[in-house]
Length: 247
Length: 70
Image (cartoon, rainbow over all chains, first blue to last red; front, side, top):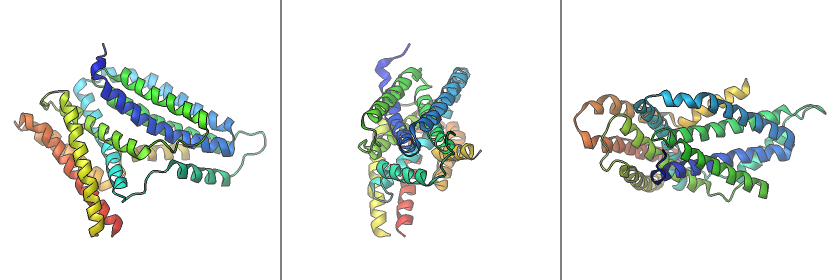
């Protein structure tokens, strides 16, 4: 039975992280479709989606056989590597050390690269286009699958986390169909900051649970960890700005 | 093959971007996993896990900012 009152962190983390991944995949599919044609772009994306779906159906049920503590430790460690990488990048971007992520610029770059690539012979399928969208969908899709598993595998939250990811996919696809342009207005840098904070907090919480650390206040401590990460990240932005000035 | 290699590289990149940062996180998690778990600090273990990660993050951010400007 799903405890929906406690499901919101999984739904939120999964939704926000998936929005970022879907936006990145959409940018590449739009670039390929515009420059090399929609047929190969959608074939590549379709094959990638099919491969991901089959993998989830085949390997998903295996998760139920993993003992809870082991699952918490593995999910916690992976979430920490994944989330803290996003958090570091978000802090450095906010401090002006790294350039902000620009979906419009990525789109232009991709369009230019694809336009210069060799064109297929008449009547033959454009394998460059197929491979490009296939790769984009598999990579971004695997990230979504990983996020859903990591935020939902523990505590029977797979369904809420999947709903969050599916809602994100639907929103991005509908927006993509409506505007036919990269979704540059999505505040991706802010989203990545929030997602980095959420995933890192989940990572600390699950790892602690898996190792048998008693969390004071139990589930409430997830919120406390999140607040602590916000405070640390805020200090990190200030520290990076100061270090930049002094260097 | 090139597509597969590209996918594998990207997957590795999901978790590891800055080598020293990833190593520092791994070392701290190993210390926590093998050392801290054996001590009888109970309610302090979680906060200690968090503090180590916070220090790793702040130190890396500081060094990255200096390196980028230096």
